Amino acid sequence: MKFADFVTTKAIKSELESSDKEGVIRELVLSLVSSGQLAADEQESIVEAILKREELGSTGIGRGIAVPHTKHASVSKPVGTVGVSSQGVDFQSLDGDPVQLFFMLISPPDQPNEHLRALENISKQLQDETFCRFMKQSKTSAEIQQILEEADDDQFVQQA
Image (cartoon, rainbow, N blue to C red; front, side, top):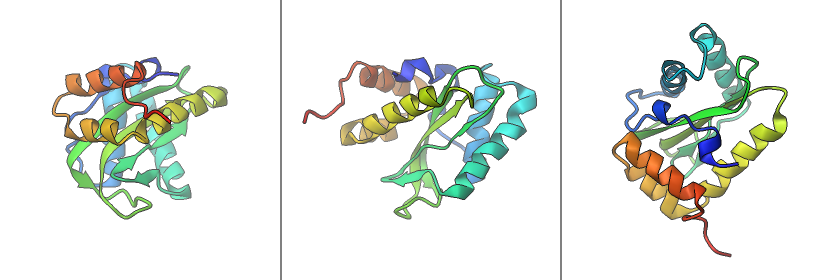
């Protein structure tokens, strides 16, 4: 699965305004609602589902990266977006560092394989330091979209 299969380019946030965990989650969900990928009347339910997932353990995986995600019956296919915070946000990451790069994913409960394939793609790309550095340094949604397209074309994956 590629970023193009689930990331909604119109929902990409090149500079998040929120300064706390719940605020970032709300801002990214709202961007997906505004882009037409999520129903407005499901917004609060989706935010609550992501926050509930965060209670199980932070999706702040370290190195300034978080992957908030959930499964929700209101979507028919995996949808996601990307957000960047230049100042960083306390997301209770595993390493305690502020998070600058957010990948949000919402998938249907009846498509666990698709959810895992999307998370696997995110995880694979996030292992590449150059990809992460470029994403964190991006200033516009267009730059982020370009980097995601380059990642889809395997331009970042480190050779073994």
